[in-house]
Image: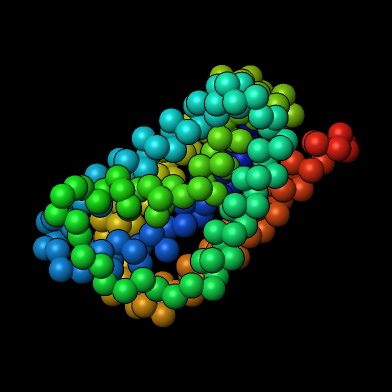
Length: 210
């Protein structure tokens, strides 16, 4: 397993978490917050994202076995949901200012789930965790090494999102709303392409096409 695989995986996972869309939601949600409170919320959100993604990855295979759903069928479904999310990102505009709910911490809901880890991302992580053994076989690696490498990539990607939110004021000042909107739409286009690949892999496996 090469270093290029790890780097490519980190980039794919980082984009899968739709960082620029999350950034725009975070800025709109925390518009009236003081800098210290914004930073603390960014740290909690990043931690919640990491916890959610790691759990989804680790328990993907167990969930499929309990529900009796084939991996190929779920790949097709997850790919379709992810594609709809990507299309929505390409078509939508930046969110307007939102008021925080005083009754709860927004770090988990709605910032981590479903803004960062939405239905399409959830499905993709479940598929990724359930198919780790087959990828390890294709790359000539052990399943445990594959798990460690992919978990490391997930944690790094989640940390990257948390850092973006922590420095959201600086990033938003640098890119402006227009720059964030453009990068969010480009990320959406990548998500659509990734979803198409997931659907194709699911159909190919379902029809036993090599």
